[in-house]
Length: 592
Figure 1 (cartoon, rainbow, N blue to C red):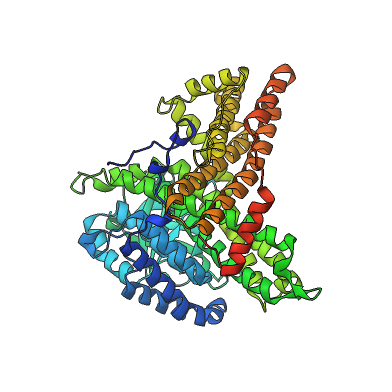
Figure 2: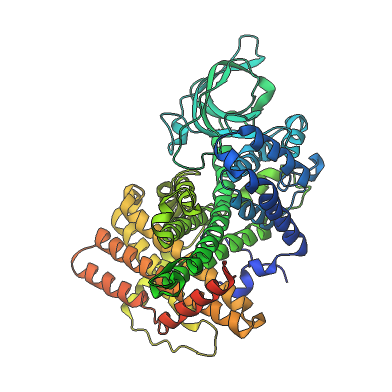
């Protein structure tokens, strides 16, 4: 049966079933093998050298990248005709998840394989690919991506770097400074964005040896210290005209489309890092004693593990559901399609909302996990002798790069509203239906024989919550809603957590029949725990949005609707958390 194709954000206005989601339990043998290869590479070749890497011995990073090339880990997303493997996004995300255990080196790897190489793959000419791609996928060369400037971060199109055609028409002369460039200190090929004649935002492929290009000193960073982060300085840098990437004035397409994949891949990487962190804390909690017993026996510690494991289950469900959605859409594009990568990029761009959801949600799950992990370690967590301190420092950047979480939050409802105004999704019609249901009583009888009936009924109501509040916001502010950032941020939190709850519930429903009784209990506990926690977040965001948008009788009505629509019967929550904590402690790792 052909996969059901969804439009981006369609999950907010339609019912999704378990058959519509891809789950990690469906990995093929080939996908598992690449995951295993990546994991063994990290354990055997990266972690033994982690201390040297943290002290910025970048020769090791370069050598390890060559080893990645030998193992095929740099060619997953590269086209077959240029020596790549051209595998699916599920495989690409699994590699990103497994490499995340490599700490700072994972930053080198993901920047190279994602934003470093993909601009060339998607937008390069055949000649450019012929010249550079083999070097990048073999690890002979390392790639970097240069978008941010000292005066423009989230406002990428506000860049001031310039490109001017030379008098003889053979070179573009680039001037400007790029800031916070990952792999900057040792990259061989930079994708650099500059404005031709100060107005046409355009991408260029620039080699390290280019006359006029120099590298600034390494930034002294809070975390991921073993990755290179520098300025790239352009002083009359002479770039051959044939190294212009894509079309003049279309650099924004490269920048933003590649960032969609970068955000998505970051979701996978932060999920892997969460699994690593909880495993370390589980082991430690069984060794560390207080009052004569292991701290793992305390309910206060067990609850932390239950909340962490449930959130990671959701994080993982989000990543691979989205990977499946993108793969299903890309599979409909024949390889011989003219301008194949244009169609391919449109396929990914369709899910720019979900890519932002994955970036925000998974990075914030990791933030919560490492905070709790450090707390489990107590005073020792604050010392470099134990891994919790490193997890804590390294985590922080994930909420900043690939677009800050605030920018991504604004992008989610902003893009939804733009698509609605173009008639691509029937938001207004659905909002009216949701508003009508707000006015009428609810007499839904739950069918207890259906798995997760309570959670599914809740999801229907949570989607109504989003639609009612989004509709109220648009009705009040019209097109000015795009400037009401506080309302948009609250709406984003609702949309993000709906996607996460739905992903976790449908995954659980799909895998339940094949599970042992013990594993089934753990999965049901994870769903209950996460659904309760995420619904609390949605309730808070929805109440905020109601207060921001309305007042008087309308506000009273909205708040009553929010109360009704965010009601979740989590009976048995404490036993569920204890089941989940005990299962994790017994396994000493993330169990799903």
